[in-house]
Image 1 (cartoon, rainbow, N blue to C red):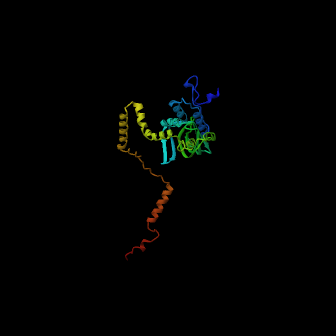
Image 2 (cartoon, helix red, strand yellow):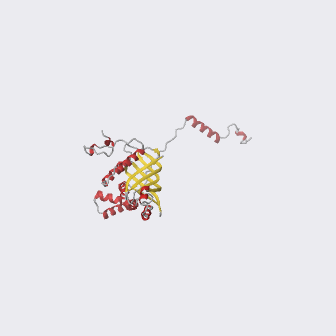
Image 3 (cartoon, rainbow, N blue to C red):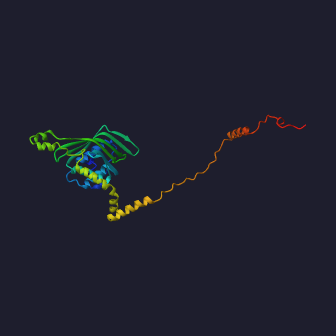
Length: 293
């Protein structure tokens, strides 16, 4: 078997029915290595189907991706679902990026019953930009990943908190444009904001509107309803859930059970109780009541 057939994305000449996922009982960091390798295999002709296949390979069906960072106008936090994740990765390359990969250093792993959590406080997202100028951007932060503990070992939650970023321009380009002060001034300006391109930032802002509309889109695709009818149906169902009385908790019938007591202990308790209430038997009754003479 050739080495290319070990690739999970290898296309068999016999058709897609002969392809199967190989089990991934390996370290979680190796899945990030495979993700980087898959991103490097991207071409200019990669369409939406390619990005959806990429997301299906590395993300669960109910996966979420969260980005947290701070811009000039304050802290930002964006969370997108599985249907919007493919477009997020494609916008990175649409903004002029030619290469994208992640470097994890000193990550910590914790195993649970059905998941594996990877916490990397020194994660670097490296992007190579070809336009508007050749620049290497290193975006540093904390990456927390939750993998499902199964054969596919796909990502369930992705949370990247960006702390800082650096934009590196090669010295050869600076030396080439040294006589032109206008070009040097252009090179001194940042081409990203916290390591993210404007294409990606605009898409994340748009996701704030698109994420709540996923229910409408899914209903339209399933039932082939008009947008207005989808909205009416969703609002009616939400109204029903709001006005519906809460379900009464089921009361468990409790049966009283008589405790069996030991015969010796019960006899001892009875005797002790009786002895407390009974008058002293050693006293003579004649001493208490006078006898007539």
